[in-house]
Image (tube, rainbow, N blue to C red; front, top):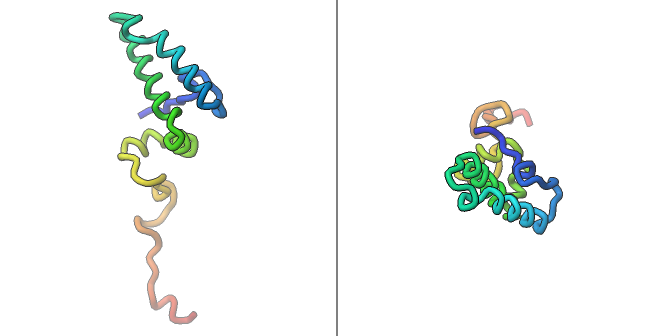
Length: 108
C-alpha cells in the first residue's frame, strides 16, 4: 500500500489545529461529495480519500500514531493496529531478542 500524506490530501500543515482540519475536510467533502458529482468515479475516489484522511487526523490518538509512524502507518493499521510500532521490523537479530547462554555469564 502506498503512503498517503493525509495532511496533503486535506491541504493543511502538519501543525494544523483540529479546527483547521475540520474546516478543510468540510470544504473538500462538499466539493467532492457523490451527490454533487453523480457518475464521477474520480470525485467518488477523492471523497473516500478525504474521509480516510479526516478519520485519522481528527482523532488525536490516530493522528499521533500517524505522525510518529509516517509511511509505516498503513502497514501498522493493516495489521490490526496492535499496541504500538513493531521495532522488530527494523532491527537485526532473531525474533524475540538476543539469545543469552548462561555459561557466558559464569565469569561475572
